[in-house]
Length: 191
Image (cartoon, rainbow, N blue to C red; front, side):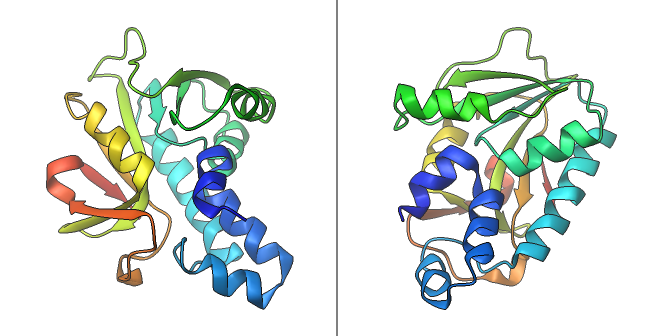
């Protein structure tokens, strides 16, 4: 399984849940090289917490730097009334993009943009950018494709949020993930 590619297609939370759901110790050990060590239960708790924080912050538009399907489902359950844009990594082919689009939960207004594009009327006063990784106020860890994407959207002057998929004490950086200074890229962290 190509874990980094899978996170580009279904998100980190959903990938973690899939690995944990197999019950395979070999698969879990292999995944631990590429993903934070988070149980399915912990991933569900974090997904709900992040969805609740996003729903409560008052943003009418969100730009997700990864198609986090589990988060989209939680936002749909919370009846998030805003617009969600999902940035698709440049490595994804057209078939992958179609599959991602087919997995959007009903009742949620979702549009897809290609990496490097900016949604129209995405205003700092009513919008937020959201990346998925883990970290603390000093260091943030992101999958390589999201680290690259956060550079594209660095010019956005509204909230740029780090949604932590793992506890800050995760510490060890998985393969294919990049470390950066949290305060240089993000305005807040959602634990």
